[in-house]
Amino acid sequence: MNKNDSIMIRVMNELLKIYLFYKCDDIIIDFKKSDKMNIINLEGYIENIDETVIKELQVFLNTPRRDDTEEYYYKLLGSDYSFELNLLDSLVDEGNVNYENGKLKISVIRRI
Image (cartoon, rainbow, N blue to C red; front, side, top):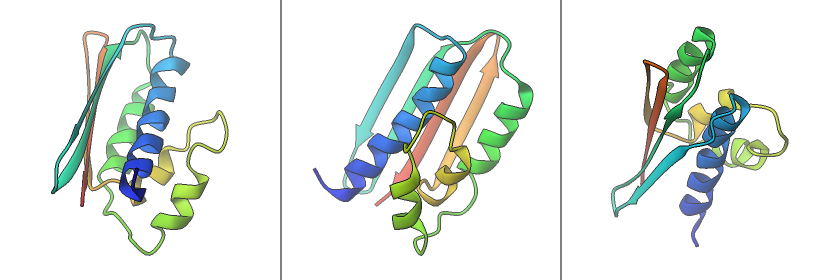
């Protein structure tokens, strides 16, 4: 397993924490890997998620990736049981968050 794979695992775990925190017990995870990019898609039903979390996620997942801080944030991510959403921006290139009729869908892309 290479470093990029390890980063994607940590990103996926961080996103999975959101679903588990909001007591989602049926989560679909889809991971696609290619020579150019890796994509993670998660979806599940969550009741009453705070709209602030959705907005913050959208911002954090679409803040430009910073290669200069990637190694540092990679080591911090997943270090405890709290959300570290603010660290995701340095590890992914783009993301999409959609919450409609109780279904939360999160997609992230990391270009190689």
